[in-house]
Image (tube, rainbow, N blue to C red):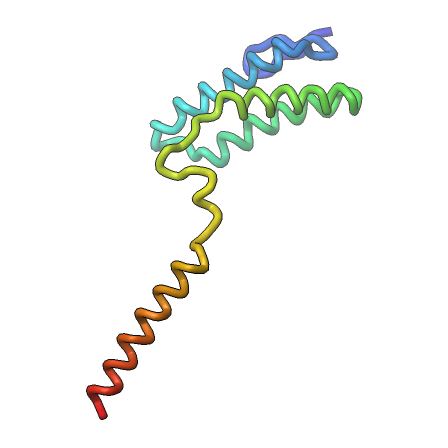
Length: 117
C-alpha cells in the first residue's frame, strides 16, 4: 500500500529514505517561501505539518514514532546555524553586567542629587 504526500509516494510502513527525502523537500519549499511576500510562513509550515500528521495518524504508534524521529532528525541536520543569533545568546545578560549598569545609574543619580542640593 502506498500513500502520497506532496508528490512523494510512501510505503506503509514508510522507508527512512522516503522520510528523509520528504524532510529535505519541505525544507527546500520553506527556503523558497521565505522570499515570497504573499506566503505567510506560519500557515505554510502548519499546512506541511498537517499533511504529515494526516499520513502518520494511520500508522501504528511505533511506526509513527520512527517516522517523526527520522523526519525531525533530518530537519535538524539540515538546519542552518544562524551566525547573527547563536544558540548561546539566549542565556541572557550576566549578573556582572547588570551590577555594572546599576552602579553607573547610581553614580549618575547621586551626582545629579548633589548638584541640586
